[in-house]
Image (cartoon, rainbow, N blue to C red; front, side, top):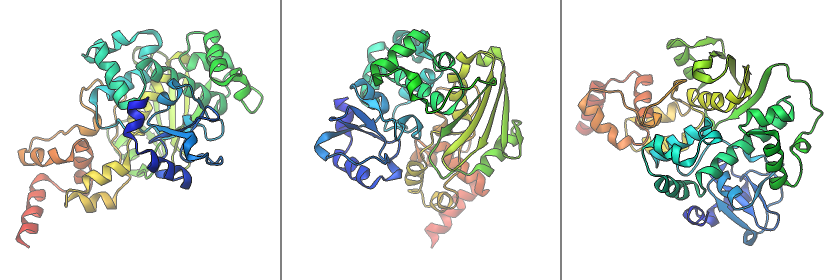
Length: 370
């Protein structure tokens, strides 16, 4: 944790916590030494003294250091952000695989093999970018998903254990007892109700979000979109379960989901694919900051700050989706080098504005002439 924590500006983090600045939600977490709890920057609780806090880039780093998630601000509901995003393709691919359950049954060595790196190298990258080991990241994913299911869904505790990737109810109970000093059922603020077959919960993202543009793009490529409702059938071959997932834009910052699956063990993978399809992990502020360095893109990004990249349900590409550039024009390819790691967003803004590569060169020529 120390290496990752030292990369953060600890004083700047504390100032953000003092003002509960929502721009930093998901970018770091504050660990309170006196209580053993970690919180989001927007936590409504009274802000601890500076000397009692240390800031880390991920929830996994906080939990690996022995801190437990705040029950008030619920770190599991923070936008899926991270200081690593856009800096390490290997970490990005590893996290996608972990989110789909790669370490629920396999080990770190097998994960490293799938990524084409050594186990020690993968551990080093995780420590550098996330401040935690791969197994800690996987454990935190399971725990935070379980907390969300406990508080948002009507699944029984046994079903929550299965759906969040725990190998057994016993392991599920032991983990929560160790982390929170109480059984998981005490985190539910209402009586359990029998599940009707569907899991209802929400996934978070960082606004702004251009829902009309994203849903239109999904419909244009053949996805099932009815108004503002997106649907997809689940299959055993791809998802490990049969059923259906339905997604609808909710209140700002939330995507509402209903997942019906005949095997709850498929849920983590389904959620990971939904996040990719709807580009929920995008960082609009970082994208706008970097792309605005290009004088042509600057007004386009300012006009449409909520544009997202529609992702594919299955994606085995080695390049991060944010940096994929499907272009043959050499001038555009050369220019797009300055857009990394957001080349795909730069191209998306040009397409949305109806600017072709040739027009891009003409705009530059006109600017230089002036």
